[in-house]
Amino acid sequence: FEIFVLAIVNELYFRRFDAAAALAEGRRRLAAKVTLLREFSARPPRAHPFELFDFGVRRRFSGAWQREVVTTLRDEASAVFKGTSNVMLARDLGLVPIGTMAHEYLQTFQALGVRLRDFQRAALEDWVQEYRGDLGIALTDVVGMDAFLADFDLYFAKLFDGLRHDSGDPIVWGEKALAHYQRLRIDAHTKRLVFSDGLDLPTAMRLYEHFADRTQLGFGIGTSLTNDCGLVPILIVMKLTHANGQPVAKLSDSPGKTICDDATFLAYLRQVFGVTG
Image (cartoon, rainbow, N blue to C red; front, side, top):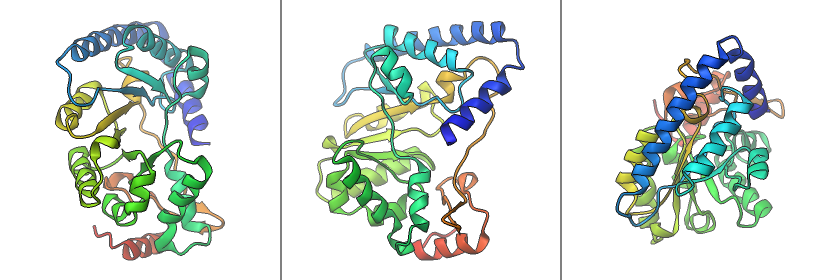
């Protein structure tokens, strides 16, 4: 429900403003982004290409504006724009639908009868069994990157195509991921790191410059693509707090992103996974 509710709330909220002025500013900024992307893609090639995805359904200015943004990027920046998480737009515009697992998926396994310490491994195993090698990017920040890597052993590291960053310092996270692959004797050039935490184009480009010669990369950009119209975006999220009548939590590497309304369960989760702070 998260995607649909947040998209509806955002569109209703932004209807209060002057749509003509917002769209004019949005088009001006979008044209500047296209110019920046063309200039960036014309640079000398690195070991792996710069690839950009639209992850902007939930906090878009409107559905119509997202369609215009995605269509423009498809038509004018096709060298770097590789898809959208909006499955309907992907179908309508002939693009690749691109996404990763949601936090709610992993959170649910905290209440599905497996031992709490084993919930991440159970979730990853069920994902592999369901998708049989497709949709191979694993989300790392439901109990933090360190706790995730403790469960992401050689078996999972070979099965999954890569990892997704969504909280904490992206450089620190990426270095931890690459070090983990190196310890497991896996060639990082065969894997992909996907960054999706509040990105804009300059941030994505800086991350690309840092990692581009060591691994495949992808950049899922949301609000700064689909709601960059001169208005202040609203910061809203939805995550699980209970499932099966039991509390669940998201224990993030960014303290402001931790979500749980049961202090006892949160303390227990921290203890089980050795998470301090």
